[in-house]
Amino acid sequence: MLEVKQQDGRKGKFEIFNEGALAGEMTYTWAGDTKFIIDHTEVKEGFEGKGYGKQLVMAAVEFARSKNVKIMPLCPYAKRVFDKDTAIRDVLF
Picture 1: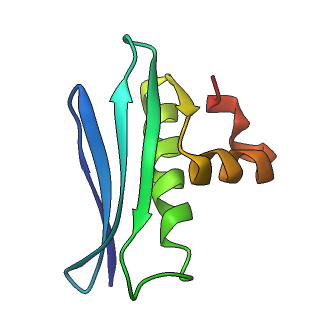
Picture 2: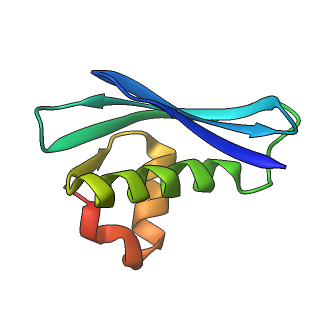
Picture 3: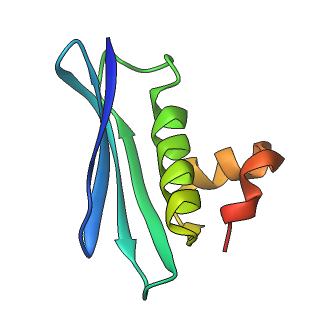
């Protein structure tokens, strides 16, 4: 069973768990009150190739939409996800 958890704060992160084991995380930093910067996405060894990184980015997109804020994807992986998927660019800063 997959589960995504969020820890919000000035510096926050999304973590994805597979059967209770930490499979990956994506960190972000707020830049003011209207946007946050995704600065790092990492999938742990043994969990690669399962789409977990994209699920973390999509969790951030859902969060941004719910808060009516924008995302600056400075992380190269997150930037690639935004470049490939036009449907999520509404939250792009």
